[in-house]
Length: 111
Length: 115
Image (cartoon, rainbow over all chains, first blue to last red; front, side, top):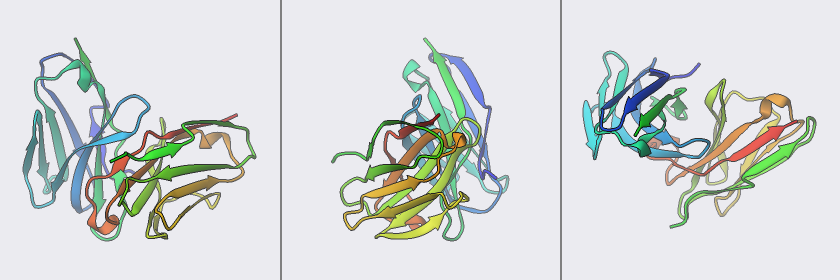
């Protein structure tokens, strides 16, 4: 089964608003990453947060990690139409295990 | 640096045929991973290669196989194609293998349609 599960499955907001996506996972992890995918294309890495970190920023992105709740959130501030894409969280569990992706959140930013 | 390249970008096959997809990682990257993406199952890990050795394999039937060459280029093969194999196949490369996971660099994918 999928390690990460994103919530909501789809999100539609107006340009300039903030978008928040959540990810829950099931087992202990080393790292949690967020990726973006534009329609039918490859994924682009956004940010990585390690299990001993609680918050990380990159430009308009803010990621939090709560290992006690096994959850993470991705906040995109002042959204733009170009942010329209699917967003995936990916986790690698402890040990030699591959990245496991959630099913993603489809974000639509309306100009 | 050139990004990850995948060929072909689009492919149409019929049931029972076999297909080979190719991936060239970023120069200097020695780890290559393959993923299958479908609307129903999402992104699922197929396998990972590092220095020509398969390090990890996902839960796929033996019809799915792969290999990596000494120049780190990788191929995956699917034999006896089924309709359910229709998917976007994504390749990703990174400098290091799975236990030291950092950012993965994805190619644009190969869209396989099985008729």
